[in-house]
Length: 458
Image (cartoon, rainbow, N blue to C red):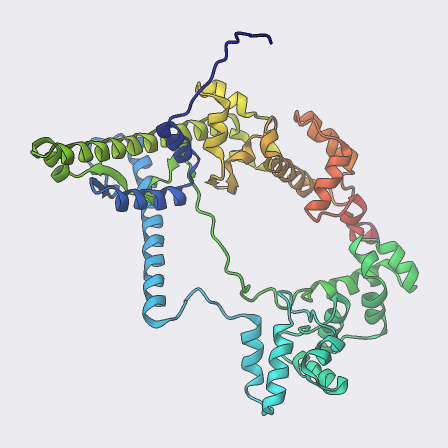
């Protein structure tokens, strides 16, 4: 038996430290819910709304910043008020104003004008429920026959009844049939259009216009005219209606406002109220004769102060990270995704003077709103973010989209050229990865993006 003496260094996180880390990772919405929970659990906590008095002594720049902050406050508080009103309306009248008309509702409202037996009404409702968000019929005729126990001929008759409704193309089995129904409704389904839709859609999706012209024995100009007619059709007739799953809005945690000579960075702290200590309980803690009460209140006051301090630290860190992003990615805020520069978490950590893991927690699940749109904070860290490679990929995808948007459509960039352009910007990426990202974004290859009309006019 052998005894050894070893020295180990351990870092033990206290409950307060864990709480501080958790608060740092919270989004504005999560922090709002957390602050409300703290108020309910801790009797000494009071919540103060954000109010900033105008002293009249601010500089022009300070007034501009205050104005932008007040506008953001008005927007957010108004939105919160609207949400509360909607919630009250739903509770009082059992009506949800967020429930927009679905495709099924719209179709059923058209069927109500006609007389159907109770049996047919149930079958029609079954057919409507079988439509997906695009407006396509997801069940086959045989599936519906098996489900409702009706003859095939009668089911086909009722499906055709649904296909006479608006929007045109609804209840189609696939894309080809959807386009055919719309062309038929317009009286434009001639032999050539039917052949284009039924036999050439895969080639059309790849923009292989010369091959289509050869197959159909027509000129490129004639095919292009037919393609323009197809572009006026809707491949998803049900797409303009409300989805059955309600959309969730992203609430930005940081707002970047562009002024003439500088950028103003606003923290979305209007979402949650400030924490303060109740003077009543503070006085009670000092003067109460019961030591047990004094100890209890002292503990609660310390807890509230620590939460307040952690929130302030979280906001300070988030602002520092946002400022570092704006400084480093200024070209992005000026011109868009194609000008995004390589940036690592370690770079930001070194500039701010904090640990890299702290930066990672600060940007986790948080969003930045600017004139270019709303982006995850991690979007701006193009490299060195292995723990969130998906967001790094999203940033590069944005750059690829921007390069393709600016290309000459007569001579679109190949994947090799895009790779070279990204490499010149400092983004080390392979051609295979570029092709993968392009496919994931639903962007066709160079031949699929080529504008054949320019060549045909020459």
